[in-house]
Image (cartoon, rainbow, N blue to C red):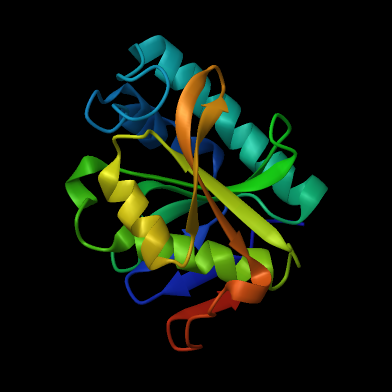
Amino acid sequence: MNAPRIDTQRLTLRGFRADDWQGLARFYADDTVMRHMLPGRGLSSALAAERAKSNIHNFNASWAQRGYGVWAVTDRASGRLLGQCGLRYVPEAEMVELLYLLNKTHWGRGLASEAAAAALVHGFGAAALARIFAVTAPQNAASQRVLHKLGFTAEGEKPLWERPVSWFGLERAAWICPSAETVSQSSS
């Protein structure tokens, strides 16, 4: 399975293309964008490029293997890459995680919530997941607001990837699906 294209009011979520690595690497190298991610700062240019290429490969492989994965988040009008959002299986937690990362120039506009809501539609709909979790750095209040807005419940703090994180969970039975006008999905 290839990643389905999902259009929201302002965004298009699509599968990553090989040439997306440069844009993704710029986000991974940015200290502000990465301050709440491991290692707490931007990656070196070489490591950011390596991580971007590896992640794109893994994101696309997940779609083929699991029927869900991470999308490239693009501006619907211009097609410009804004970040990543989607679902990934986390072996250490034995659960599926909602994740999102947007370029800092697009923070504070509700785009993370918009992209994440579309990912949940796929996760609870087509992928038929029963539960999705998310984690944030304990001090990442903005990301925690996104999760609360989406209906996630705080589940406390415990370690993951050798650092303390705040855990959030959402059961399909408790999820409120957005209206059909908000998210439209195609197989292209």
